[in-house]
Length: 257
Image 1 (spheres, rainbow, N blue to C red):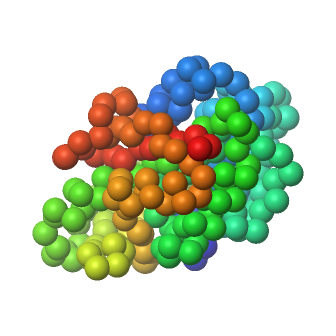
Image 2: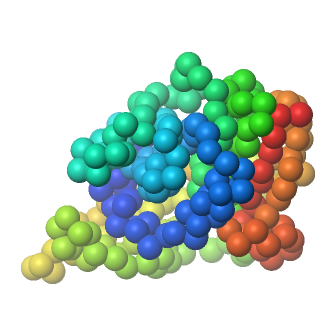
C-alpha cells in the first residue's frame, strides 16, 4: 500500500477534489450522534479529516504513507488558525499505533479496509479499533458493493476513468485503469495509469499497481462480531438508502457489543 500511494500522492487531491458526497454523510452522523474525539484510519492527505475538523475539536488521522501525510501537513500549515490545534497526524502502521486515548468516532473511510487482504490482518485491525472505541462510540466502514464488481465481466482492458488538471502544474492528467478480479480470493488487481500532458504536449506516464480486497456484508458482519462489535446500520449509498442489490456502496455503522 505504501508504494502505491507514494506514486500517486501528487495526483490524489486533484483527482478527488470534487468528491464530497461522503463528507455530507459524515456531517450528518456527527450532527446526529454529537461531538467527541475522532480517528480516521488511512487519512491520506486529509480530505475527510480536515472537513470534520471544522465541526469537531479533536480529530486525528493515521497513515503509513509519508508522501500523503506530507501533503496533509502542508495543508495544515496553511490552514486557518483554529485547525492546527484540532488535528493530529500520525505516521504509523495502524497495527502498531498506540493512540493513548479512546474515540467517539472511528472511521475506515473510502475503501480503506480494502487494503487489509488477509483475515488475520482484518481481525487484528478490528480488535484494536474495538479497544479504542468509547462505550457510546461508533465505527464507520465505507466500502464499494462487492456484488457489483463480481457481476461485471472481466476484460482487463485499459479504461479511461477521468481527466483532470493538476492545480500545481496546470498539466492535464488522463487517469486510466486496468483491473482483474480473482473471485476465489476476492482480490482486485488494478493498475492505475496516469498520463500527464504538459504545455508542449509531452506525455509522462505513471504506472501504479495496487491490490484491493472486496468484502460482502455477511462476511463483514461476522468479522465485526468476532471482534466485539454489533452492526447497527447498513447503507447502500451516502444518502443512507438501504443496502440492496445493485447499490453502489456498502456502508456499515457498528458499536461495541
